[in-house]
Image (cartoon, rainbow, N blue to C red):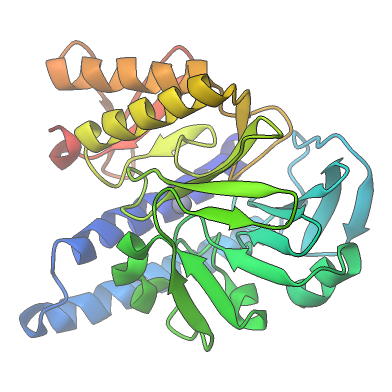
Amino acid sequence: MLYFRCPRTVVLQVVVRFGSLIMTGTTTSINYNIYLKMKELILSIILVTISQVSSIAQDGSVQIRGKEVFKNEDVVFHQIDEHTWVGTGHMMYNESLYLLEGKDKALLIDAGTTIKDLDKIVTSITKKPIMLVATHVHPDHTGSAIDYFPELYINPADTPSIPLFMPNYRGEVKNLKDGEIIDLGGRKLEVVFTPAHTPGSLTLIDKKACYGFSGDSFGSGTLILGLDFSSLIATCRKMGSIMEKYGIKFLYPGHYDGKNEETKQRVDDLITLSKDVLSGKAKGEPNQWGGLDVSANGVRINYSEKSIK
Ligand SMILES: [Zn+2]
């Protein structure tokens, strides 16, 4: 478990730190050579990590309930309920993708790291036309399989990361709006922007089913904070009130192991921990990757000094 978790943490810490560098405008011509060098470095780290991690079979601790409907070397799909499936990859800490079906169309939430023929796999599960949404633009959610889809919907705040993480995407990137409703026919998903992990992280809420899909917005175990603690507190407050108002029981995370659903309690615990870091009550321990880790009540945040504001 430990050696399985570590590679994802390494990759994502580098990814998040570099992502925020780009956000702060470091891709000017003056810094372009540094940008290219860092990009090269990050991509090589990702590739090395993927090659190391992929030699490890599906994490033994992942136990998704529900009928197995598809399995190959890249992904396993389980049926969560009548019209919902979760796909589990094994490249970056069991990265998860979700397939939801309505009467008229289907929604694919995220595309994993590398899943060959993902379009054919999902159309073997549902016959409805498929719309692809990314919870955020990180390579374990917008991997090579996005190329099978002509359109990809995102929160536009992640657009600056597109040249780094999905430079070869040939389709059209379309922008979602905060509060927008995606109507699949008899099944509606509300788009809720939940920035903190990345500027353009989003969560999709199915009010009727009383659950949602949060990508890495609330941690999937460890929250890797790309923005600052004030943004995280605001996002958690926003989501907490939505969960309370609509009776949302839990959120399926972007790295689902069968038991790490995000609950309102966990969202509240992230607020408490964030406030404690800001007040100085809680102090992060340096980790070996140059970041800081802080945890309490089972929630854990990985952050950098500049996030303390
Ligand atoms: Zn991520």
